[in-house]
Amino acid sequence: MNLNEDSLQKIAELARLKIRPEEKESALNDFNKILEYVDQVKGLDVSSIGEDEIYLRHENAIRPDLMGKHLSREEIETFAPSFQNGYFVVPKVIET
Image 1 (cartoon, one colour):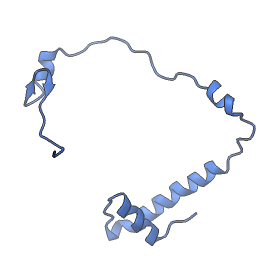
Image 2 (cartoon, helix red, strand yellow; image 1 turned 90 degrees about the horizontal axis):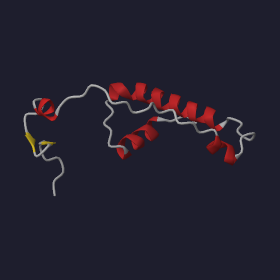
Image 3 (tube, rainbow, N blue to C red; image 1 turned 30 degrees about the vertical axis):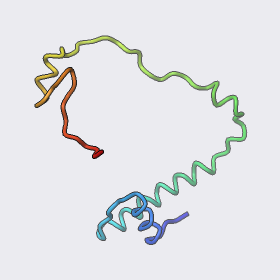
């Protein structure tokens, strides 16, 4: 599957991306590389793997939580221009 400029433009509009004219060729190339990779994944033979096997192979790869050196609340407060009731005070982002 190859993307053309019209498809790239439609994707950009849907994703609210602004792709400058000088970036179009590079962006088109990047998207096509991603689609080639997706096609490779789709082409993999997974018929030998049963549905139940997918879940049985799962191993926890997360490292254990270890208590280490940490900053005190007072030290953290010095990083923020405004700190109130244990929270960083930041400008409003969502209008209600």
